[in-house]
Amino acid sequence: MLHPQYAGFVLSMFGFLMQWPTILTVVMFPILVYMYVRLARTEEKEAYAEFGDEYSKYAERTPAFLPRFN
Image (tube, rainbow, N blue to C red; front, side):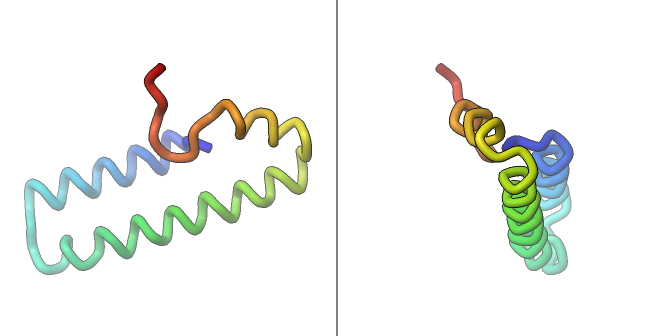
């Protein structure tokens, strides 16, 4: 699922990395991206458990992290 808060956070962190490339931002960026991907996957499992087939249909037509341009 594409979560606007997570996508916005990763985009903001990427902006900080480009604007202020320090050792801290270079080290923290991949760690934070990894943590947010794990969080999104955990929430996705919870959504499957709660909504079942309805969520499966939603997930088939909705990309996970990056939007599709058809």
